[in-house]
Image: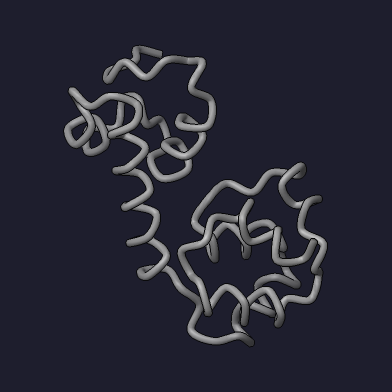
Length: 122
């Protein structure tokens, strides 16, 4: 795959975030046009801002909608709620398995990253 915006393959976290929002991100025209010429820090800021806007656009209409989605597919529900890739390792750090509690806490601070959110239950 040709890397159109020169993100180092060592920037795994940045690439994971970019690929979550823009599959095949290195060749995605929209992503490339917005991030061309940016350094890693600037791209990360752009993706953080994009994540916050996506949280607003894709939020669940209600707690019950989240609970139903969570019961069907825990990972997909959390990815939609947090707008970030949730892998098995991340999922294992979430000590709360009660979807109502997860939703209610998330509504209080909707932009909190998943890794910070899991700290609420330590």
